[in-house]
Length: 209
Image (cartoon, rainbow, N blue to C red; front, side, top):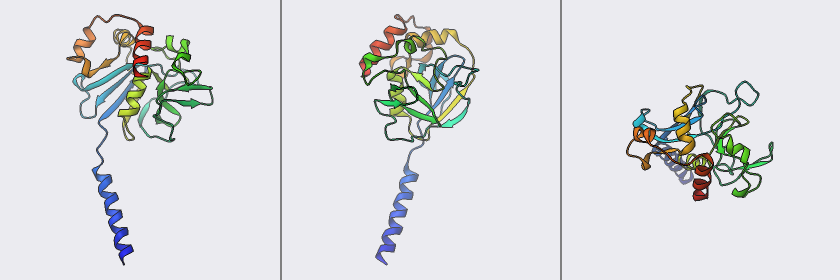
């Protein structure tokens, strides 16, 4: 009798715990034409709801490495995802902060030859902002880390062809948008940002590691 009561109580506790789980706070949009990843507040898809925006490299269109479009959901499959280092055996490279969103397709950092930030793939780094991956969405390390830590299972991901936007792309290459660092998204778009791709990556990646 007591075993049955305890089992019922455990089931109720599990159910209540599941109900108490908060819905994902964010939604992710990938614009392939602009090579831009935008994280929105889940309840606000306007400019005011943009929490973070980052440059990326998707798969090369028209090839076997093309990144598929569609609506997906973040779902962790293996324990070493969302950690500092993840080995991709097929390509014999390490990447940082993997977040899986569609089968084999991941958000992750640009590749490294070893578990050492000094061994960054310089060609991949120079191509960030253009389609260059094997289908995954490559990001700066600090951006991949942010997604891994802040976008749990259940976070929606939309990958779309989108619209080319060279002004936005150039701005994101110089310095990605982080909501807390600006008074408004419009102010960020109008800002005269200094520095370039390599400097922004090296300075901010080192800071994040």
